[in-house]
Image (cartoon, rainbow, N blue to C red; front, side):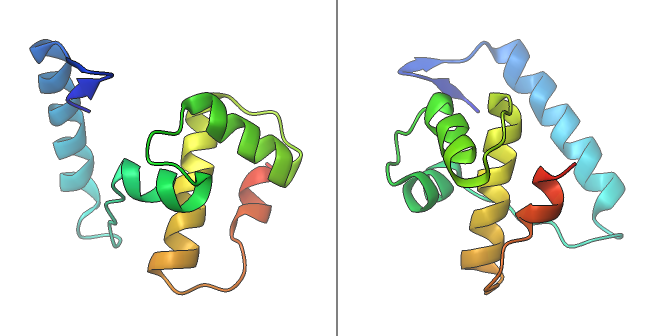
Length: 101
């Protein structure tokens, strides 16, 4: 993520994240389908606002799945729901297995 709020992130952080992302993509591209989900897309669709906060995602998961999760887990669950429902045409949630872990 290049921007945090209205500020540009530190270049070292951007470089490190890019290296990690490229390594993961290189390792997995032949093994599975990789989907990119723009943050504003899943936030607007799942949480109802493009500028929704991490706390909004945590609240959504707690309200929807009765699970206490950290903000990273909440983001992942929301992204998964977006992918399954709106990109893959799924009619049921894959989140039952994820949230029961």
